[in-house]
Image (cartoon, rainbow, N blue to C red):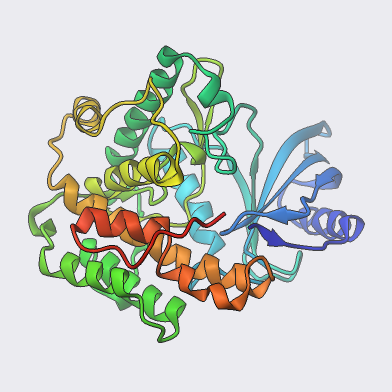
Amino acid sequence: MPIPQARDEAKMKASLAEWLNTQPGISDAQVTELDIPDSSGFSNETLLGELKWHEPDGKEYSQGIVIRMRPTDYAIFPEYNMAVQYRSLQSVRASSDVPVPEVYWVEDTGEVLGQPFFLMERLWGRVPSDNPPYFEAGFVKDATPEQQRALYTSSLETMAKIHAIDWRAAGFLEFLDQPKHGPTGFAQQLGYYRHYIDWASEGRPQPTVEAAMEWLTKNDPTAELELVVNWGDARPSNMMYGDDFRPIGVFDWEMATIGPKEVDLGWFISMNEWQSRWSGFDWLPGFLSEAETVECYERASGKTVNNIDYFKVWGSLRFCVVMIQIISMQIKYGAIPAEARFLEYNNPATHQLASYLGIDPPGELVPLS
């Protein structure tokens, strides 16, 4: 269930144009189009528009734009910092050939549109759908096995390029580090998710998540693993693909952090399994097996993958924590009754996590739809 919103399009266009005219080198800015969806995504609001302006050379320019805003009403994550997403995109673009959109401006006070936001260029291509899942319907499902394989392998190759970035030289630590949750690296990720679980659950028991966090802490293998930029939400639905089924855009950096490369790979594997097996759909014929996925990534990166089973658990745990907050949001907006609160700890995601851990599931499986 997306986040419902109601917005005054004319007011937003006027406020945005007024603010843009205060930016260096910009004059006569006009937002000529603005597509405001009735609902938006879980973690950010996304608006599409068309911008015209003049620069000091007197020429008029126009550009398709994307506005990414912090959610107005209901937050999926404990903290939001749109400048972190903006700087992540900016730094990836400056330090690699990973295809990310150009970012133009960031407004982090919330005074212009009611919430902090940033503007980036609009790219044109195809994005695999989350709803319905791309394993069920859409251009990926309809593609040939060869095209599906091209999409899958090129996604892994793009992930490897992200991990090859010299994150220290590129300054990622300046805006990704959160020392209040622990030392830089995986220990900090564990600390953040302990905080996230407490914040989302508000004291309600989460048996499978709690068992997973205990197991992850006890079996942490990361002390000797190399640190890289973790994209955080590494999956096909956060990429845009061209006609050749290769990425032309990598989006959604709100979960970016520093950690082992296996964090992204484990998330990629577990989320694809969630979208297929745990959502009731067949694996696509052109997609790779888990062993082939690891081999493909190793070829692309030139690095050996370690402890992938551990990082599948970590990816699944992270998604289960997000699901706690999504269920709370659905209850708030009346999509499901308050009596269905049990879905936050007994759903396909927690059953996937229990399967990875080799423990009993938290009850009889109850589909979310």
